[in-house]
Amino acid sequence: AAQGESVITEIQDWNRYLGDGVVSQPYGVPSRYEANVVRRDVEWLTASRESSVSFTPLHELDGIITPNGLCFERHHAGIAEIEPSQHRLMINGLVDTPLVFTMQDLMRFPRENHVYFLECAANSGMEWRGAQLNGCQYTHGMVHCVVYTGVKLKHLLGEAGVKTNAKWILPEGADSAAMTRSIPLEKALDDCLVAFKMNGEALRPEQGYPVRLVVPGWEGNMWVKWLRRLEVGDQPWHQREETSKYTDLLANGKARRFTWVMDVKSVITSPSPQAPIRHGRGRAVISGLAWSGNGKIKRVDVSIDGGRNWTTARLDGPSLDKALHRFYLDIDWDGSELLLQSRAIDEAGFVQPTKNELRAARGENSIYHNNGIQTWYVKADGTVENVEVS
Ligand code: MTE
Ligand code: CO
Image (tube, rainbow, N blue to C red; front, side, top):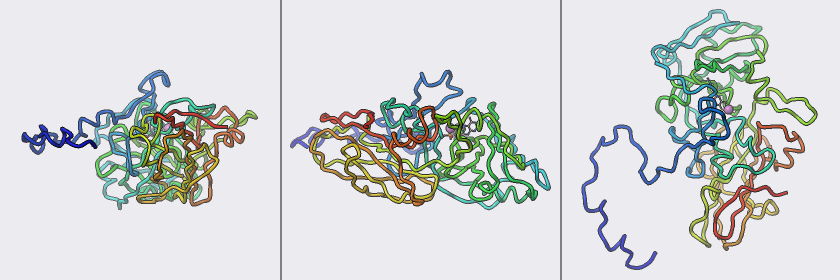
């Protein structure tokens, strides 16, 4: 910084006058200088805002936890505004005793806290056929990661008593979409949570207040919000969301179905199109996120030359099962153009594929489950563009 800068030599207003007192904001809000750190939508993507999506501003965030007000939203029929005392969760079907729980009833079961990412299966879906949207908020922002407080689903199913021929459950939402998905009983009894808190406070209405299903590592569509019913059955129900939607049409005309696990994936969040390099050459921080529905991230490699050479990035912060992982690569930028890529490897050994590898395996029809390697083209002036390299 220059000598004799006025920000140092002159007394600023915040140094001269008393500030606002406590509780001037009973529920705190970010600094007004952070007003551009918000969810955004892409108007032309959907016909209405009720059946639509908004995206997490990944390029402005750090660490692994998404603040509640910035979690992307995906609703098929708008946000249900539920009065919690009027909400019920019912378990029916192949159970010894059909049960109805109030919110108070749910609070009396043993509680657990877990950090998990939630990724919509359609995240990066617009990028299947080529580079499209200019910003990691739009290309990768259908993911968030919070700490959930809730009750293991196995406790509730245990209370109802699951019949021996039961193999599947069908969670149903109380919104006007009444969203339903078939989930194998094995997963339901393993790590699924019925959650009522996120990052310590009540779920936001957008995220399913007062209660949602948490299906760790599996596609976001299965995490039914405003959860009102769990039916237990002996076979899947073949609902709309697992037949006409959330299936992947291959080149041979057949479709992959029940593709639940979100594959290993990563993206550089900064620099990126909405977060250009503004400081010129020299010391620079490359930062990004990696995650996998198979468990923890083992390693992330970063390339600055479009995938020819790779350097292992530094994973920093908690490394948790089925949660976002933060990585950094600290570089000395000589001001030349870069083709930035990141490639994640998970603890099961899966390696994030290139987009061409993905298209070779799945064809060009797909929307869902695009975990291909993203390329950002950093120009000499520090601006960044979404591109593909072949
Ligand atoms: N649950 C209900 N009841 N209704 C919905 O429209 N959308 C699903 C899922 N659960 C949806 C729902 C989809 S497609 C996704 S990706 C996630 O919720 C999004 O969760 P979020 O809005 O908390 O980010
Ligand atoms: Co979704």
